[in-house]
Each structure stands twice: as structure tokens, then as C-alpha cells.
Length: 385
Image (cartoon, rainbow, N blue to C red; front, side, top):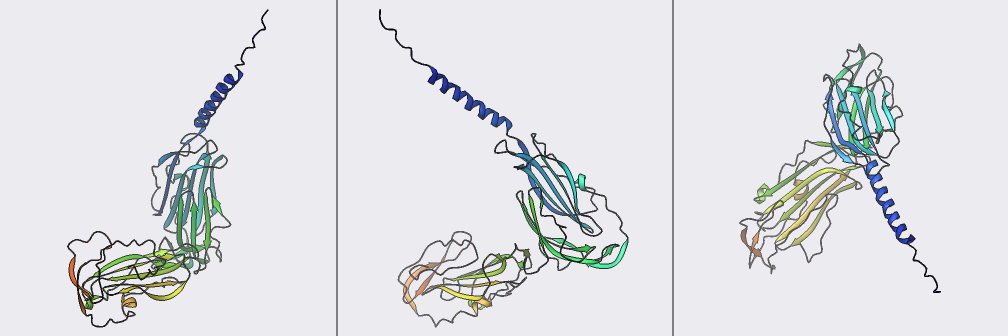
């Protein structure tokens, strides 16, 4: 009798197949549980005389089954104006039935929100302000008059209106809203029933939105904002008006900045360009500073920079702040080298002018300079432009 052969066990093969089936099944279940939500943000200042405001949005597929769909609508009413902030999309948060919250009721400024978190495809289907939009009323006028404003820029020209009965103080502050793909900073002026900086009435979050207010003018500065570029054609036209009427409300603790950059490529001054920029900055305050980055024969690059910590302090109104500080060059002595000259911040040099270079120059420069950011302009080594 021959010894019986042992059969090979098929359990490893069956285990591998079973494991693969489990993985595929798990993946399919995960995909099946992943939601598709409406996605979008909206921010606007509206007139309360409108009946309501509606919108359309896109969609997004959430990352995994831990996400639900959220609707968040925040309405700040202020006399004849209303600020609307909307956020829709996927969120990692527990389910929440539709909830209407009066964070601050009138008279005067009022703050209302609508929030919801749900777990069905496209269940965050809020499409208008109707759930929290009340028809405008005619309040009984009181004895207090306040400036009334909702603006992402400034409130210098805000109208002064009679407040309703029940209000006793004027509010003047800044509201920052961040989260749910939303970031906005808004200056608020209006009527309140009590003194103090308490528009939010203790509210810190609304859905995915984080709220912060401040009535300290040094926390949220208002800075001039703008970009300007000049081509200077002759020495007697190098002084240009540098005026900016647009303003920007900065983030907390940012300062105002203004920067001028001058590039001269022609000794006679006939080929020069200047770039000016103003905005908010995270840099530290700094007194006006003049820097000469390149003073080689034939090419001059210089800059003016100023970082300041009070509203609208970046208010230099002329390029003279840089030009008057530059040393006056001696009468140039021509050399033997001929080079093409051009400065163009926004493209290629077409039909550049050819000039006789100064004595001491030996080569023609041709290159591209990339400007990234405006907080600082660093000097280059002397062997480069």
C-alpha cells in the first residue's frame, strides 16, 4: 500500500480571493456612501427693498462618507442695507436640522443666520434668502442719528440717518467672516440699543464661518490700493502724479504699504519706466526708505518703500518721493559701445532704440526681471542688474 498523498490546501487562494472581494465591496460601499453636494459661495450688499435674492450653484463630490452637505446663510441688516454671505458645500460635521437663529435682533443692526447639515445627495438646496428675508418695515423714528454703512472698502461718505426708537448709540466697527471658502472684512456703521462693541452678541461661529469683530481702528486698517506704471520719455517729465482713490480694508494687524520702482536704461533719461503699488502688507512698519539697487554706467534701478500703521497713511501723491532723493549724475561722457535700450513691464521690446553707451560700459545687457510680491525689494549683487 502506498502512502496517501496530502492534498494541497486551497485556503490561501480562497483567502486571497475573499480578501479581494471584501476590498472591492468596501470600496463600492464607500463610493456609494460618498455624497454629492451643492457647492458655492456668495457675498453681496443688497437693498432691503428687494423682495428676496436667489442664486444657482455648482456641485462637488465629497471626499468620503464622513462628510455631509451644508447650507449656511448669514444676513446682517442695517437700515436700508443688508449684507448677505452664503456658503454651501461638503463639511465634516454632525447632522443638523434647518435652524434659524437671531443672533442680534433689532431695533437697529440685526444679525440672522440659517444653517443646515444633511446627508443625502444635493440636500443642501437652499436657493434664496427667503427663509430669513423679512419685508422692510417702517420703524418709528427716534432721536439719535448715526452714520449707516456696510462696505468692504471705506465709510467716509456714509449717509447719516435717523435711528429707530429703542436705539441709543452709534456702532462703528469691523466684522471679519472666514471659513467655508469665504473670507470677507466689512466695515459696519449703524444704530444700536446699547454702547460697546457687541454687534455679534457673543456669536463666534455660524456653521463653518468664524466671526470676529473689532472697534479698535488700529486693528483693521483702511489702506489705499492700486497699481500704476509709467513710461518716462524725457527728464523734465519724470515727476508724475501718483494718486489712488481706491481703498481696501486690511486683515487684522496688517499695515499699509506703498512701493515705487524706477528703472533707467538711457543716460539721457529718454528710456525710463516706473512702477507704483499700494496695498495692505504683513510687514512691520518702516519709515520711508530709498534704495539704489543698481547704479552701473548705463542702467539705474532704484526704489522707494514705506510701511505705516495708520489708516490711509500710504498716501504719497507724486513720484517725487523717489526722484528727488536720487543723486544727480554728472554730465555723462559717451563711449564707443552701441546698445539697444528698452524697459517693458508687460511684454517684449519691439523696435528698441539704439544709443551710444556711457564711457566705462563694455557689454550690452539683455534679460528678464521677475517681480514677485511688493513687500520688499531686495538689492542685487553688483555683478548683475
